[in-house]
Image 1 (cartoon, each protein chain N blue to C red):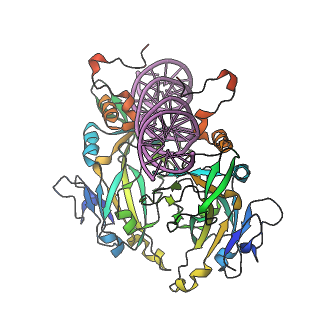
Image 2: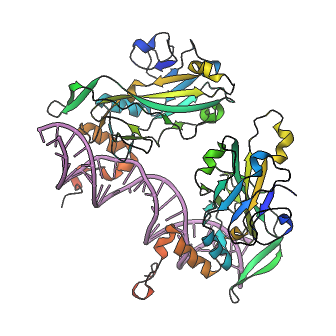
Length: 241
Length: 241
DNA sequence: TGCTTACCACCTAGGTGAGAATAT
DNA sequence: ATATTCTCACCTAGGTGGTAAGCA
C-alpha cells in the first residue's frame, strides 16, 4: 500500500483505498495507511468530469508539439481536507499506461498496437505555479493546471511535459505536505499522496486521428470557436478558395 | 531615521542614507540603522528609468478608472543584496505628495493648485503576486508590478489601488523579510525597508491633460500602437468619417 | 505510407487613447 | 466650465485546428 489513489476501474493500486467506489463521482480520498495527518484526509474532486468522460468515451487525444501545447480539457481539481495552516506543494506527472506504441486505423476507427513503447524520457514533474501555498489557499478555489504544456521535444528546456506521440498516458496529481521540521526527510514518504483519474487518460498525438475527438474539441474549446459551424447547410467551410 | 530610502533630490528622508548620490543612476540602497541583516544590504534598481525620466520631465500622468487601469510605464525593479535563502514579501503603496488638489491650465500648459487635497482613503498595500518567495527567486529576474491597477472608485473591491484624481502621488516599494522565528513581531520594525524613486511621481487623472504626455504614451506603450502616425501627411486619422 | 512540422485564418482575452455623452 | 464615464476601433499576446509540405 502506498499513498496513491485511483478512481474508476479496480486494479492493484485500489487495495485498501477508500473513495470512488461504485458511484460515478470523480471524488478521490487519499489512503491513510502510512500518510501523515496533513495528507491523510485530503480529498480531490476532478472538475469538468462530465466533459472528461465525453472525451474518454471516444478515446481522448492530446496534441503534442515542439513548442508545447496545452491540454484540453484542462486538468482542474477541487481540494478539501487539507490542514488550512499547513504548507503544500501541488504537482503533476504523466505515467505511460502500458508498454505499447499505437497507430490509428481509420477504416475501423480504432487504435491498434504496433509494438513496444519507444524509450521513455524520465518523466518530469510539473509544479503548480502557486506552489508552495497553505491549505486554506488551495482549498478556497479550483486548482487549475492550465499553464501545463505537452511537448514531444526530448530536448525541451521550457519545463514542458515530454511525452512520446502515439503512446498512452495517465495524468497523476500529487499533494505534498511541506514539513517544516528539521528531520522532515525521514518522514518524506508519509508526507504526500497521489491521485489518478482514469477518465483523464489520453493518447498523445501530433495530429488528431479520430474525427469525433476533433469535433468535440472544436465544440467545447473556446479557442477553437472559429471552426464551429452552427448550421452546416448555409455556411461555407473556410480555407476553401 | 527609518528603514526608508529616497533617490533624487535631497530631503528630510535622505538623512543618513547612502546610495543614489550625485550620479543619475536609479539604484537605491536600504538604510542600515535599525534594519535586520536580511534587509540591510538590499539594493533596488528601477528598470526603464530613462523612460520614467522622459515622462517625469513632462509631468507624468496616470489614468485612473472605475474598473482599474494599469500604470505605464510599469513599475519594475531589479533587486540585489537579499539573503538568497530568506523569505521576503514585496509590496507597493502610494503616498500623496502634498496636501493639494490640482487642475491643468491648458493656456499655460501647467498644473495649478486649486485647494486642499480631498479626503484620502487609507492607502492600500499591493502585494506582488509572487509573494512570499525567497531572495534568490526575487533577485534572478526583474520584478514587475504589471498587474497593479489604479482606480478612483472608493468602494473598489478588486484590490486595486485607490487614488484621488487631480492629486499627485509617489509610488513606494517595500521589501519585507518574513521572519520565521516565533517572536518575530517584536522585531517587525527591523524587518523591512522601503524605496521611493522620485522620477516615478505622477498626477492621477481620469483623462490626459498634457498632450505631450499623451503623445509619449502613444509612442512608448505597445498597446497604444493603433494611435501612432509614423507619417502624418499620407495617413488619415481614424475615428473621422 | 504514416507521422511530423510550419504556417495560417480565426478565435479568446484584455490593454490603448479618442471622442461623445454624461455628471457635477 | 470642468471632470468623469462609456463605448469603440485598434492594438498586443497567445490558444485553436486546417492545410500542405516535409520527413522517415
